Amino acid sequence: MNYIGSKLSLLPFLDEVFREVTDGSEKVFCDLFAGTGAVGRHFKGRGLQIIANDLQYYAYALNKAYIQINETPDFAWLRAHFKEAEAEPLAFINQLPGVSGFITKNYSPVGGRQYYTEENAQKADAIRQAIATWRESGLITEQEYFYVLCSLLEAIDQVANTASVYGAYLKKFKASAIRPLRLRPLELRNHVPNCRVFHRDANELITEIECDVLYLDPPYNHRQYGANYHVLETIAAYDDPKLKGITGLREYPKSSYCRQNAAREAMQQLICQARAKHILVSYNDEGVMSLQDIQEMLSLRGKPKLFQTNYNRFKADNGREYKRNATIEYVHYVRVVKAAAAS
Ligand SMILES: C[S@@+](CC[C@H](N)C(=O)[O-])C[C@H]1O[C@@H](n2cnc3c(N)ncnc32)[C@H](O)[C@@H]1O
Image (cartoon, rainbow, N blue to C red; front, side):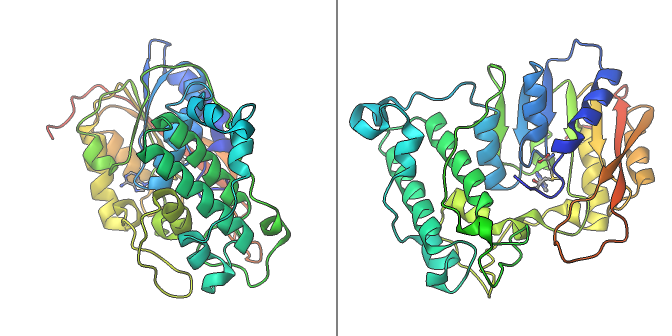
C-alpha cells in the first residue's frame, strides 16, 4: 500500500541500524505506530516476536493479518459449503455478486462521490458484508476474517480514484480505478507464535507492554492519518459513520503527534515510560519536533545516537512541486540504561 511515512523502502537502513545496536539476544520487537505493518513484518521475518499497534482501525486490520497470521487459513467452512470455494476460497470470494451497501451509497457515483466505480464499490460491499455475516455466525475464524479484510483493504486501495490519499477523489476515473477489484493471497512471513496486535493510543499501551526493542515511527507533521485514510477506515470498520462534505469525511481520532507542543509532551512521556532495552525512533528533519528535541528526550534514558540516510520524499500529489525531492531520514537510538518512569 502506498502509505504516507511507510518505511518499506527504508527497511535495509533500519535493518542495518538494528544489527549494529543489538546483540542477537533480543526476542520481542514492538512496532508502536505500525501503519502498514511493513516494519513488523520485516522483523517477524527475522524470527522476532512482534507487538504491533496503531490508532487507526484499517492499520490494526492489516497488522492483525500480516503480524498475527502465520499461514494461509484453511477456510474449512467455505470449502465445505461452496463447491466454487473448494480449490481457492479467495477466488470464490472474488466472484460474490455485488450489493449496494455503505461503500456504494457513499463512495461511488451512486452517492455523488467518485472514490470507486460503482462495480468495485458493490463488490467491496458484498465482500465486507459476507465476511461480517460469516464471522458473526461463527462460520469463519477470526484469522480467516482478518485475512480477507486485509486482502480487501490492499485491493480496494489499488483501485481508488485518488491522487494518492483520500483527501479528495479525482473528477474523472483514472485507468487503475477502472480495473476490477480483485482480492489476492497475502504474502505471509515466518511462523512466529504469540505475536500481538493492538488498536490503541500509543501512550496508553506503552504502560502495559514490555519489549526488547521499541520502534517508534509517529506521524511527523500536522497531516492526520485519520483524515487522509478515512475511506479505508470506514471500509475496515464498516460502522455506518456520519459523513461530512464533498469528500465524505468521517469523525476520526486526532493524534497528539501531529501538533507541535502536544507531540513533544506525548513523545517525552512515551520515551520515559517505555520498558525496553533499545529504543529506535524514525523521525526526519522536517517534523513538528526537531532532531534535537528527540535526542534530548532519548538522553533521559541513556546516551543517544543518530543514524542517517538519504530518502526519496513521499509524493502525495503528482501535480505539486516540492522544494526538495530527497530528504534525509534519521533513526535516533538509545540503549536504555535509566529506569522507566512510573505510569
Ligand atoms: C509514519 S506512520 C507509520 C508508518 C509505518 N512504519 C509503515 O511503515 O507503514 C505513523 C502511524 O502512526 C499512527 N498513529 C498516529 N498517532 C498515533 C497514536 N497516538 N497511537 C498509535 N498510533 C498512532 C498513524 O495512524 C500511522 O499509521
